[in-house]
Length: 386
Image 1 (cartoon, rainbow, N blue to C red):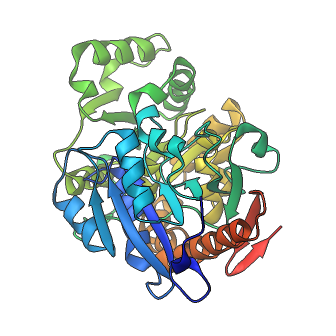
Image 2: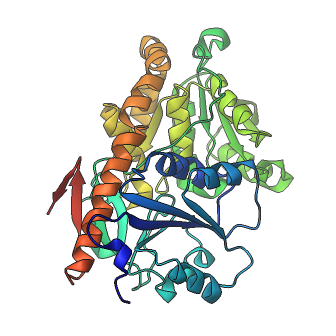
């Protein structure tokens, strides 16, 4: 593919963000801060939307770009042709891990292509050059798990909470006289092993309750029966469990955290958005460190917040960490009061995050212009690290 003249020195780099999830969904909450904070003197930003569902969030995202293209009516090949016609230099995929989300990249509509944001594993496509990550989620040795070259930022994660959201409030154990554990993760992450470990936590904390909430799925009687039976097999009676369906809006969902004291992270597939939301709402998370990206998201978040004692490496250590935290009322109150500020400063810093992304994009383009094959590298601030 020839290099277009507009990308020569002194001209803005033309970057495109492609997704089929540009509506009120988790992808948009991670993408919006990026679109809003790019340096428009150096980067021309185009949004490419494949989603047929369009709402107010779609319009908000479109307003954050220099150009917006609705590709929802085009098949993959036609969409790739449209992107190529825009002479995009770097195409960034921001979508969940579904096969149909990434097929456009197989046509190589841009000279440099990468995966970012809501992807949690390799695309498996030779046409994709890079994947944005960081050392906490993809430590040394993880490169073998990817077809892409890994670009490790100092903080690859940036989430935008809603403008009108509830404050954390006091920890509910003060009024309830018992600790409430919770998981708002996808039910598919709650395996029999997870149930076994969480049952041990409940068994060790007399009077404690566990709340499970998942969008729509727990409205199904079969799903409720399954989990009640799973916990009952470990001696946990139904009266200690609350099985809830999803809330009608994001504000209601976040307000639900005001009724929870401690979030229990599933494993080996950790929470992503759910952990960000819990921490921002002042609810500490107990996690289990795994060997892959999906098993190390909790390591990433808690490590940045200085909460390494809540990161377990064995089931026994997980139980110990959860029980110790449940028994430390003064710490639960402190975390409730301080976590939001800590998360805002340590995790949700869009300006620094986008500055590192821009450093990464510039290095990718430099390598392309120099005729160099893509290679892994790191970014710390405005510095490119070997």
